[in-house]
Amino acid sequence: MNIKDIIKKKRDQKELTDDEIKYFVSEYSNGNIPDYQISSLLMAIYLNGMSEDEIFTLTMEMANSGEILDLSSIEGPIVDKHSTGGIGDKVTLVVLPLVASCGVNIAKMSGRGLGYTQGTIDKLESINGFRTNLFFQDFISNIKDIGIAIMSQSEDIAVADKKLYALRDVTSTVESIPLIASSIMSKKIAAGADKFLLEVTCGSGAFMASEERAKLLGEIMVNIGEKLGKETVAIITNMDQPLGRYCGNALEVKEAIEILKGKGEDDVVSVCTWIGAYMLKLAGKGENIANNIKMIQNQIKNGEGLKKFKQLIALQGGDVNVIDYPELLDTAPVRLEVPATHSGFVSAINAKVIGEAVVRLGGGRLKKDDEIDNSVGIEVCKKIGDEVKSGDTILIIHSSDEQKARLVIESLQEAYNYSDEQVDKYREIIDII
Image (cartoon, rainbow, N blue to C red):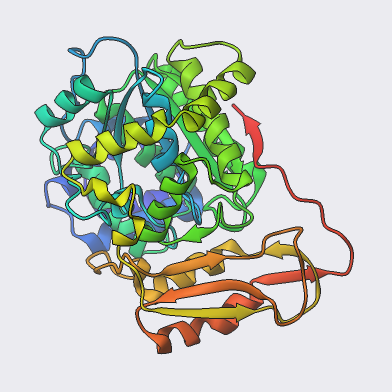
């Protein structure tokens, strides 16, 4: 067996055997297959797809390429939440403290930014001192102490996925359903939780542009969870425009704090409450979703969600002063307003263009070893359904360099479409699987 034959087989649209998948995952994890050959295989998978059997085998081999965390010493159900990514998607930062404040154990292993999206780990590390590289015993201890811990993927967990995750980002194979499903579920399995809530984003700012593909991805991941006896729910959310007001690491942390203080925008609060409600159901805290939504909303009103976020920051070494003084987070020195080019109602926003602009400003990675500028980002002032006049500010660029900011203005203006007629605001929650 050799990698050339495996690449050729998948190139020719044939199904790989369990042994062939095990071979390339194992040999790549051990450093015996170079990046350039795996890049070819990733592209073949991207172009030709995989069967559900192939995806399940790939998921299990990736999970078993490293340690499987044993969380059995923690009493009660343990719930994990994952998002497929989007523009301005700070939901994890908000919903996990809220759910944990309701007495649910949260064990979360997160990734860094991928493509034109920003990652939860990058966002949390924009808080001075916040440690995401936890020892396993600390991860367990934190969950026992405060009911929540968030860690980055360690070198010993889902080793194959860690390598493939970075390679997908720089080989334009991020959007592949088999690669997304196996990456997400291998990490969920390796992290040791009992139940999974999967947020599958859909639209111009998501890797799944169509509802059909988003639902297919959700169904595949739910089926993987069910095969393993892990109760799994996928929620399809709308990402046809940025979620909330800010896009960019430090900016999104600031916004998350504002949401937990009860000052969030309707769209992001809606997504957080729905996801939180289903996480409560998974944990056995209530079968009625409407009641669970009220429970989550109450945790915002009474400040318990914010208190839990503060506990999380403190326990993982971060500066808790950012809760009361968000200006302590990195702040970009340049702010440049983007004017509307037309009058009318905003009818569509290409959220991906906004995400790509954040990357060009330094807020994302073009190469897997790129450093990120946590201070930069985009502030969204006008959204779908809003009325504007030509010259009104639709976006504000937060940049460390004025020249970089000016280079993205035109593309950001082109991301907006306008209508002479009133446009209905879209629904945030598309489907539940």
